[in-house]
Image (cartoon, rainbow, N blue to C red; front, side):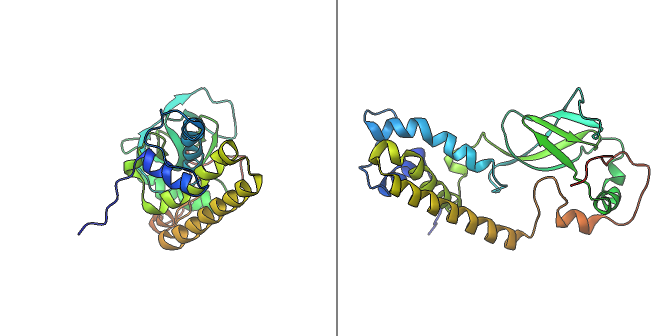
Length: 226
């Protein structure tokens, strides 16, 4: 027996509606207040969640295109992919110059208290040459969702549509609190299990792989301490 659950927007939406409680829908395009509220709030709510953390959903890698650098504390400015939700890691592309010394250079980077990259809007700043971005993509579907992620999504969607359907601010606040608790619990468990630090700082894997101190490698910012 397989316990694999295939999710859809309607399944998740109806779980959110049940928390109000409100009658289920059969389609997002049907008439009624509930379907209209879901059309407005469903996608933005999930996109906002995907932008908060590396949930391990449909992780992608992409070599970034260079842009004109407007921050002298970083060596390079890159254009982020259009589907970027959460930036997980920046590393040199496999064939980029200096790739062999990358993990060696991390020791200096950490000791100096510098970040590997900085995200500003749709831009990624880094001093890593030929950078490849590992990231969580917005271009995923409900088929990529895990039950743990759905448990975060459901109360978040319910809170987002609550006022339109019930006009109850007290219920909205309760749902928002539940959504925050679900997210915080997920993050705590996820970090304990994977033991990684995400975003612009070093991962534990990278710390283990670095083997010494190297100089002269153009990998670190000059004026941007964490």
